[in-house]
Length: 140
Length: 140
DNA sequence: CTTCCTGCAAAGCATTTGCATCCAT
DNA sequence: ATGGATGCAAATGCTTTGCAGGAAG
Image (cartoon, rainbow over all chains, first blue to last red; front, side):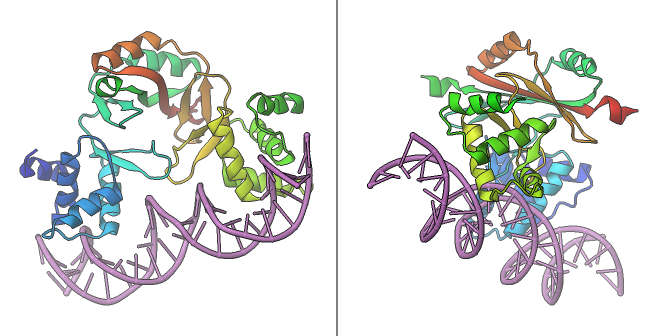
């Protein structure tokens, strides 16, 4: 993804596109799965021309999450993982072996959700589905 | 739930039903929603006739979770929550205001899950749905 | 006796915060 | 100048672990 597009994502949500924030976003956009704050930080640190503090990575991820730019998952019990949002609404397929995460971009569950929620007096505002299993590669 | 039944749940999974483990289980069975390790511990401590260490609560919850007696959720970002499993397979309704958790005991999503997973080459082994919204009480 | 369990206190670790400095407007 | 952003280090808070004493069979 071009830097221009990444910058646009920030500006759109009223986030000042600082060097560090763009760096975090760029790093996330290279990651097909999800990554922890520390992982992203280490990768950026490894490049001598990019300096950034771990606290800034945390602050940035929290901000991006709050504004809907990144997802925050917590499958690995003790550490939170982040990934760039692809679309507004989607679900996840998780591979139990290699921990690959596939984002599903189709969701036709709307009706079912309303029905189930209504049955318990709930007004549903969001839903999230996670399917765990083995990916094609790990199956073979 | 009777103590006998609780004890049975432990014995069935080859867990020695010690006083502390039963206490944790009994405390969990009184909790309609989910609770953190510290919350359960404080409640048990409050009763002068029950002594238990926080570490033991953590160890017990981890064990029970591993053996499928309790669920471990992590909605509240920083603290893990536990709740007694009702059935083998179920989903959750979460109230965004009061944090009540309702366990759905019906799941008619089987076909959908297989279809979606298969489309991406996955062999699904488990799935989890969480629906967030406002419960009847918080809506009014 | 031997094995597993528990309590306490001491780590461990991810995450947050205080504060001085820096940067952009 | 002024308000936000950052880096570093210190603090926080949940969770785990080491170890000595205990309970159970």
